[in-house]
Length: 138
Image (cartoon, rainbow, N blue to C red; front, side, top):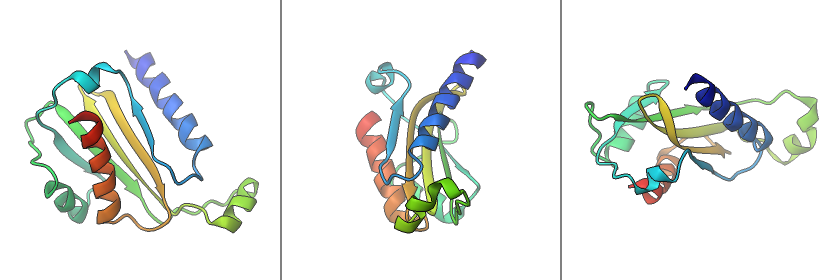
């Protein structure tokens, strides 16, 4: 079980590393079965904690603290890439933030949405990411 999780996280990490400078969302579904499974509820977990993000998402979906499906929202702003290997990309403008949505059940990753952002995370990006998750799974 743990080796599967480590392999999955490693694979996602490699994909993120290779695509870190693109402005496209990366969507991964652990299994096609999740697209057929009825997801009737989700528990919201925002990390690092942010009340604005939590409130924005709560306007889009009625989250439940007792649900077995956990939606993890993680983000980072003000990212600076100091690598000289990316000098050509820096000239064009590197992403300065990212947004990741992960749906898990019993600590098993079922769905992942990741996107690099050229600006600070806002309501528009949250709505776009959550809308894609709803389209794919709900």
